[in-house]
Image (tube, rainbow, N blue to C red):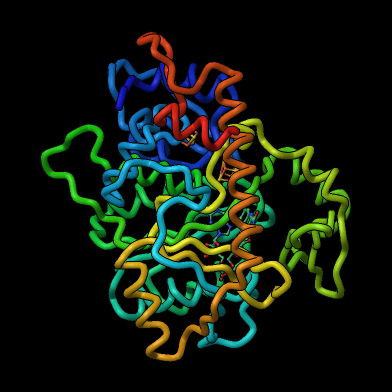
Length: 371
Ligand SMILES: Cc1cc2nc3c(=O)[nH]c(=O)nc-3n(C[C@H](O)[C@H](O)[C@H](O)COP(=O)(O)OP(=O)(O)OC[C@H]3O[C@@H](n4cnc5c(N)ncnc54)[C@H](O)[C@@H]3O)c2cc1C
Ligand code: SF4
Ligand code: SF4
């Protein structure tokens, strides 16, 4: 992995519009801060190599390096990444009235991991108004107050950095694919620190096609609704072309064409729809709004699912073949779009030592994805 300093990161990632506001560079040093949905460098730093650059999911990501580390395999062309199995799932809620996004699988698994002391703390994303706010949660029951999707890109990994600083050794994280990649970069120990410890004991990734930029989305929404009265937002799968806004009384619909106008430039380079470097990935299930699609990727993810099943906290069904095919197609299309954009902008597999490559992967694998 090629690692540079914060000045290169500010120039190559932030100023070029590649930043996705994941928070991996925030709260590891005094220089980077997140403010109302944007990441900014407060002061220049003179170090030639920094953790900010090493952890950033838009600086230098080598997919073979990540895949070998987490799965012991070279990165392949399966659009869903490496996995053990894919299921339909639903959480069996230990609480009443929580506002889950879909089947509540994510919240129930995070709750169980905390309750069983598999993790000491969970890094989750709450909201204040429409602003996504990362939280460190240690009381299992507090997991449910962070349920539901915040469609604004969130600096969730800043809370992971805080948890490490506070001395937690077993940390659970719920994260979008870009955040999962930032975390995976960190888990490689790219700075070769002698006292390094991989504290990410559980990574639950969320499916993501795109997010919206808080600064432009907030005025659009607050011009239409009282933000305090918004209970939840949802984007149902196609053919619906709307964003649903659940209010104190009833539900409103906004045209998806309007909402797409708020997608930040950084999302257009994104090639990962299913959070491929997590233990478990969770998304919606087409045609079943009360359930999730659950991808089990690692042994430790599998163990948590078995525990949840054993104690009756999770219901699992076979995923219909048709759903799996749709998911793989959507993931492949996103990967193709992301790779094409990276190639067009000269950010893919560059040989020039002076140029950074946002993404590196074997050319023959990229070719299979693109064609
Ligand atoms: C920006 C975004 C885009 C998404 N796009 C898709 C998509 O295209 N297709 C699809 O199938 N699913 C998508 N999802 C995932 C989906 O909305 C649900 O999160 C998922 O199905 C889990 O449902 P659940 O009921 O188990 O979640 P819940 O039990 O309600 O838990 C939701 C969890 O998500 C976390 N969270 C919420 N917002 C964020 C955020 N911005 N960043 C990091 N963590 C967050 C919370 O901490 C909470 O733990 C998206 C989610 C987000 C945040
Ligand atoms: S993508 Fe994440 S790590 Fe990179 S500059 Fe933006 S907030 Fe920092
Ligand atoms: S589309 Fe990619 S970059 Fe954008 S929020 Fe989702 S995972 Fe992050």
